Image 1 (tube, rainbow, N blue to C red):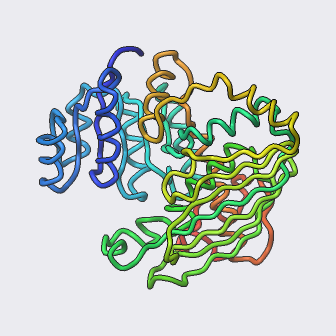
Image 2: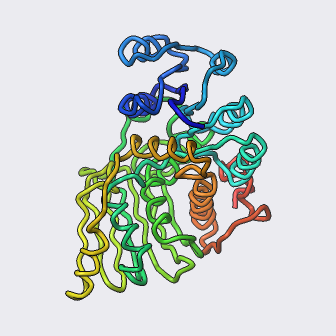
Length: 360
């Protein structure tokens, strides 16, 4: 597939951020359609952003035809049905996080993607930051050496105004709390750098807001490589920040503390020795940064589709993210460590939402 791709965006909350990114790539994408139940949002997208058509009904938008890509930006409980219907309609699909609320759903979505012969790209836009791309290059080139330990901090603030949207803070619609809706991005960054997680031990709690879902979490991870990591997340921080730190054989790396762009610059790299510093400089000498965040991810998707390659973020990546969330919830409920990978025999394979699990 080549040329400009006609995209339809469903869900005009975070969907407006996606539209803004698509508008920055006019040589790659056409803003063909939006879908949202609120007329004023549709009118704004059409009138201000130049989208061709607005639809109240998702089915109507799909039936209108002429779309190459459907971008799903709805509340999480709608992701699986909309993603599968869009794939079955013959469109490539982009889906906001979380892709679903269970490993069973992710596996069913993966099967649907295979049968459709289309491509599905989950959104993890933090991967497309210049700082994290520099670190990934150092790790992949062997310059960093063996990863030892890492830490991820997600210190954000959410209160009553945020939860005024009635789908938030409820298992039935948001599918979970800070682990699935907020810290999931930074946790994905760590997994994208260090690979498969082998063991998880976690605690989650609801300490900040009067909601069903968790708003505080801590976890320890052991990766298959032997690397160890800690995750800390809260929605009750007076000062919002996000931070990743890694200590490796030949260097230490640390992000900035900007809350919503932990993959972007500035990142700092400190070498163990002058020889290591020279190796870092050499590995990064020809580094050419591309566009970041949504713009970077959408650019990479177009390039992959044009070449007939897998998307830059795959369903397998989303499964690893959902697997980690499943392990965190299970460990927090049982008080026991959880070994990965998780298959269909796991008690929470069908989901962690209390009325859909065995409450273990």
